Image 1 (spheres, rainbow, N blue to C red):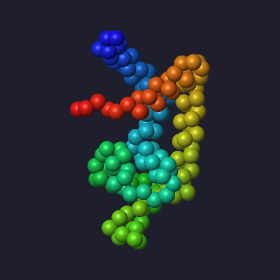
Image 2: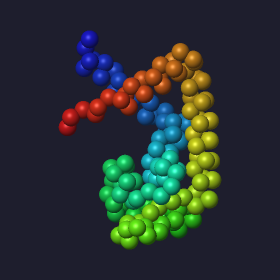
Image 3: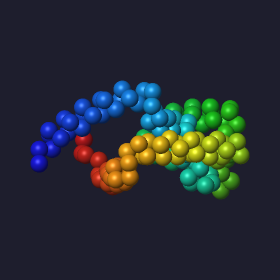
Length: 144
């Protein structure tokens, strides 16, 4: 198989999809996987206190950027931060009730969007798409 030719076709399709994403439900999905939405979702998934460094490591961004994001979320009343009583050098982050409500709202919206997108593909292609995404998640990233 000529993987280079297939990669070229893939890139062409990605470029076409990029144009569609600017005004499509896919944009909502993309946005939910970054920034404040991602931080809120990360905290919710861990169901309890998390460390800013854990968020930073997961997102692959600086601790300064995470601190700025957490400051914004705290101002909005979506998270709390408190000193860990067992290690006063650590700050623990958790969701407020408002934060939990917002995460649930975003989750439901994303589920509706993804359900619509998959239904447009049809059963066979939807199952294949989900399978391939799962497979890609298992594959090691290429060496740099």
